[in-house]
Length: 194
Image (cartoon, rainbow, N blue to C red):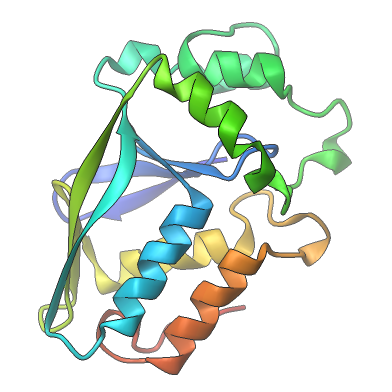
């Protein structure tokens, strides 16, 4: 489930996983796979010695927010609209609450999810800038403090809400953590993985 996070630029925004069978993350109206997020965060950590690090993240943007869909309606199986509705038709919410855990193998469904989202979104390169001196991160027009940026990373590390099934994380999440721990400075200073 996506959670609310405080940005410096847009106030409270949603970020997170939204279907346990997919590793796709949403950031407001932008979408990217968790594997891509972790790869990009790892690159940022590898370039920590630069005061500013700029890159472009390949993401999907749904301009018409109505085409994103109704997450709660899809979870409850009563309203399947937009991209999220189509995703939940294919990968419904589990019948048993105990089965509500983020699946570490969700990345295997990326081809299917990519085909689905392509009908609703356009893929763009979103500029991202890590300012290790000011301790701020820009993801497109969204600006985050170091504290919130670290909360986003820890959310992915934990498997969001409901957490990774069995406490097992995909390799790409483990790789991100190793790269961050090797370079514990700037935006990554004092981050604690629990």
